[in-house]
Length: 96
Image (cartoon, rainbow, N blue to C red):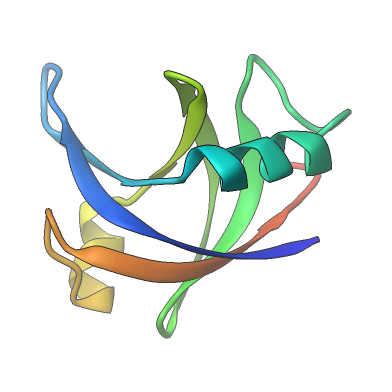
């Protein structure tokens, strides 16, 4: 099932900064339903298309919604900056 999502790129500080697209609560509920039987440890494997960039990753659950990890290489290739609102497409898949 394909989803088209839009959200802000947020920073999550830890030992190093990580950046994610923050999925809305409503879209997170739809993704959770679509991921039944596929999720592992709360994560959901997905294939993501951000502009012309396609990559595999896993959604992270956080505070009732999902976060889409955006590696530095992906953000650079897609021209995405922290704080920016972006639109992407993703498919729930069997493995990340």
